[in-house]
Length: 181
Image: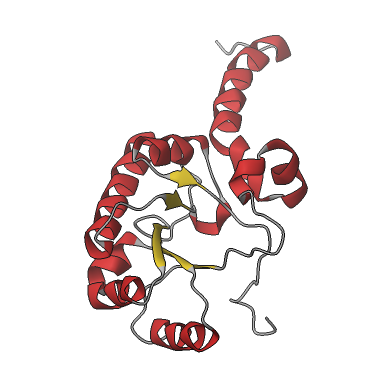
């Protein structure tokens, strides 16, 4: 015999599921610049007038990174490179060259994945692995974590803090993957 489920009962089921989903992905709204500045000012960094923190994500890459390094050297500018753990392991000489030239290495994750499916254990494991790999090639423990796509879920925030990393995003975005950037 089929039973009808009342709207009230459905709400009892849907509300907890929605609450768990919101708790996981809600912090990801930090990519919205207005919300980030008002509700999460530390994620964008607290700068001072006349100071710019230049950052790059995703490397190190043996083809493009040396060009960035040469350009930055020519300008006398230092930057923070948020690198992927798997790339630091794959190209340790390039990562070490970043440090040798006076740049800071920070963590961008183990891989550049999307965090849509919550897995706090996976997040903790992969961020710890990435922090260890980056620390090994840099010769010192990294301080910063920037999540791929700027999507900082509650699980990744907690994993970063457990790994001793401070989550940070950005205040200006070059959108360098676009052809017109």
